[in-house]
Image (tube, rainbow, N blue to C red; front, side, top):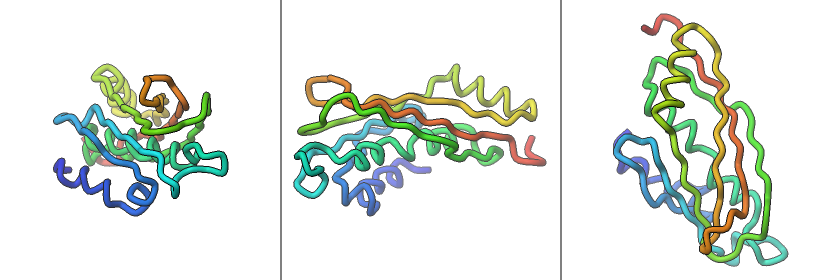
Length: 149
């Protein structure tokens, strides 16, 4: 997927409406940074970031990073997700998603052996001071497609 298509995420309805912005995509698609400012339309009743928007910041990226790195011979889906709110989010918040070579190799090796793999990833949403305001845990489903070598 060309980088320009990744940057179009900024105009995708759920991201655009929530004020989520894709800030950086590494050339190998193994690191992505996103951020979100606090606006009147994306805050909750208490004037802090709406929890659904905080989760939306983290929702698609590990799936997309794995699809991009594993290639078309693999099926990758979301299996489960959990978000834990640690403190109120105010101002600009951000999250960085990392996919290490070791984790990628482990997933590929297990899937190539015919196993269904359910890797878990953790991302932190931080405020401008670098304090963690939320932790997002994602469990994915990965398997090798039939007939793929």
